[in-house]
Length: 73
Image 1: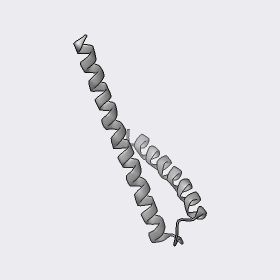
Image 2 (image 1 turned 60 degrees about the vertical axis):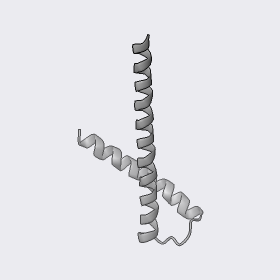
Image 3 (image 1 turned 30 degrees about the horizontal axis):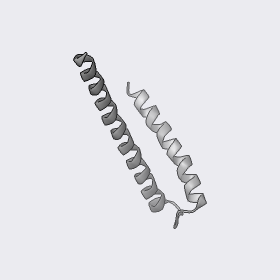
Image 4 (image 1 turned 60 degrees about the horizontal axis):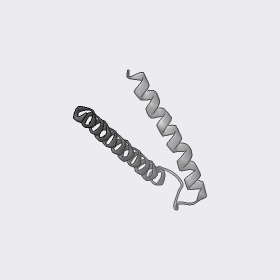
């Protein structure tokens, strides 16, 4: 029974590490996207247009990442 509990804890720890890593990567991608939008775009403030464009571009960034990951397998 102890072995099962240790394996479960190990699995929970792995899940926590993976989840936090993914959250950090997503946050970093979003931060960079916002930086680039202000650097290269026509945005001066975060209004509805900005947020709509950000959501659209974020989806495109994720699709591109997925394509690149899948093409490198």
